Image (cartoon, rainbow, N blue to C red; front, side, top):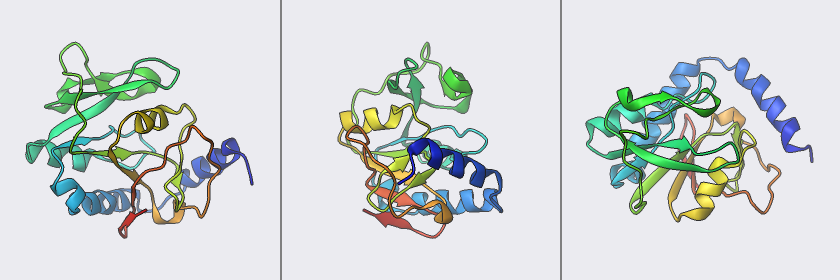
Length: 185
């Protein structure tokens, strides 16, 4: 089986050539927003998308409108540690580590209770066991291993893999949202 770095290179290139990205992103977000997982959650742990990532801004807007507690990750270091902080507006975000929009921790409250939460997880690809091909720093793997939480990987249909290389430190998601459906694992 190829190494993770080889898979990353393949999927990074594949992302450059995706067609109808905004429509596919909209459909993925719609599948999340229509799910019981979202509807019954008290809080949503989301990410603010980088340009090539699946755009979660529709989920962010709906969570704020639906008065759910919305939290985004803050990278505490370059070694894979992150915390989540509540935001009430995208105006509470600023550019952080790796150019990622993160909560301004000077004004945002750190999440300490993850009960009744759903966590949206980015990645290049996910396999049918829930393992992800991420960006290589292990931030979400460390977070998901630390907390018992419902997690949803966001993935385009044609980026799903039968099997990805997984190590002991990798954490699987519970569900995968594609533009066609929400897959329970």
